[in-house]
Amino acid sequence: MSQGVPSGFELDHVELFVPDRAAAAAWYAAVLGCAPVPGTEHWAADPAGPLMISPDEGRTKLALFRGEPQGVRATAGFHRAAFRVNGPGFLAFVRRLGEIELREGEAPPRVVDHDTAFSVYFTDPYGHRLEVTTYDHTAVRAARPTAA
Image (cartoon, rainbow, N blue to C red; front, side, top):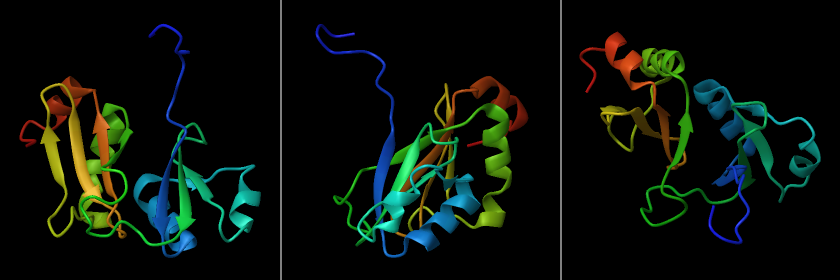
């Protein structure tokens, strides 16, 4: 901890602009298992407010706002949001890649071996760059000996 800076900071949410919050929430539910966060419904009732969704019961969230998405503008928005899973969760996600038909821009998603972690890179339908990553490298490598 740096002097004077409190510890314990965690990522709470990432704000995303989408043309239709309900359609975006459905996509994130199908791909990452996100669900609306109980207790935040009043924010979504306001057309200018966020629809809060989460893959982990609200510990980390995506805040879906109605607006113009990032699209293909390379300098717009954040660079990438990464979701961490354990090794079995990562392998299950990789097995679903053909079924959920993800893209990384115009290309198929990449499974990348970073020597100490594995990641899959892809975009949502609005151009936001996403990643699913695991640090259970040994277990994933043993299960996927031909992983790239």
